[in-house]
Length: 308
Image 1 (cartoon, rainbow, N blue to C red):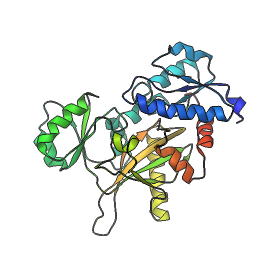
Image 2: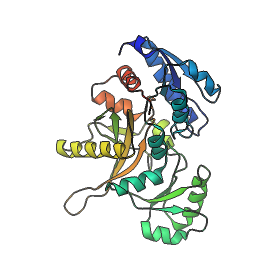
Image 3: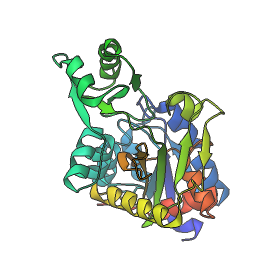
C-alpha cells in the first residue's frame, strides 16, 4: 500500500495501564516512523481524549500496552466504530492478556506450558512450594512487562509475593521455574520471525531488565540448529493461532534444563498481542534479523489492520 492509501491514522498510545510509560515510548516511535513515510498519522492518547473523537480516523495503529489497550477493550470500541485496527481481535486480545486462560487453551491444544497453581488468601503456600519446587515465579494473571512478578526462593517469601501480585490483579499464578533459557518469537502476518534468546544481566527478565538496563543480552540468531529453530517457530505460530491471534504479536517460551540425552523441552509462557516498539523491544529486533527495517515493519503492521 502507498502511504496515502491508509487515510487518516490514529496511533493509540499512553492509556491508563501500569504500562503507560512503555506505551508512550512505543507509540512515539511508531508515530514518527509512519510520519517519516508520509502517512497521515496522528497521536491519540485515550487517557487524555474522548474515545468518540476516534470517529474521524480511517484506521488505528494500537501501541497501547496492558489493560484497556491490549485486553480487548479498545479493540471492542474500534469494532463498534467500524475502524480497522492493528493486531488481534477482541477475543484473542483478551485471551492473550490472561495468562491463566492462555495456559488452559494451550494445554487443551497439546502445547506444553509450565506447571502452575492459582493462589488466593486461603491457599496452602507450603503445599504449593512442595508441588512446584523452589524457586518459582508468582505473577498477576492479567498484567504485562513483568509488572508484579516475583522470583520466590523460600516458602516464607511466597505470601509476600502473592500480595505484591494481587495489587495488580485478583487472579494470581504461581508457576514452576523453567531455567534452561528464555526465548521469544515475533509474529508478522503468517510469518514467524527469527527466534531471539534473552540473557538478562540480573536474576530474571524483569521490568528493569526489559527497559532500563543496558546489560541484557539478546542473541539473534539464537544458536539453535536450523531444524530445531524451524520447529520452534512453527510451534510458536501455532500457539499464536490457537488463541486466535492475527496481524502481529510475540510468543514467549522457556526451555527446561537438558535431560540425559541433552534435549530441552520448550514451554510456552505467554503471548503479547500489542508488543513493545521501543529501542529495547524484541519485535523490531527480530524484524531487523529478517531484513525488515523499523519503517517497513510499522507500515506492514498497519497494512494488516482489519475488523472482525
